[in-house]
Image (cartoon, rainbow, N blue to C red; front, side, top):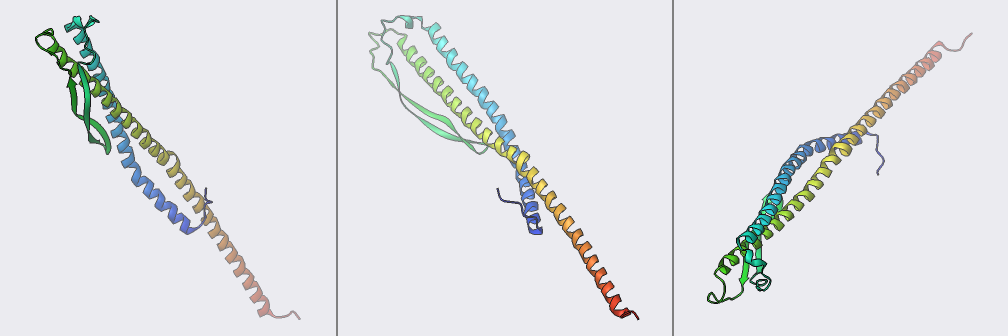
Length: 208
């Protein structure tokens, strides 16, 4: 850490830094509060997405109890082949958003398969989409939490370190300069007094 210079130039630099810190802090604090709200909203969305996914899977089990029959080979009936993510800008933070989901449906004959297979295919697609949305909601939440921690650290840096340090440095420099100025005045007065005494001695001349 550089040693603080006790000069008028250093005083000016510290004062300018303090102005800069105070100008930046409100915008940082605003972003922190906005991120806090967005993180809470993302937490609610994540919780709701998880609940929706679990509720859908429970409903599928209730609607189609025949799925419990292990002899039915339904494991590869619906398979995800890919999905596309977009970006959403939230308070300057880029968050993923699901744009599309592609699934491959295994071929089956309507004539030799139960009539409820069509319903099952749609329900499985819905369940896969729901799980993926929950996963992406979790990613959005984590990204916002990371950004919130970073901004909070910066706010704390300004509030607890940079601004108090600048105030302290300005006070130290002012005290030093004030004492130096008073010392210079005293020195000047002593020098002037000495000069007057010397002049008086020369004026009076040698004693008889």
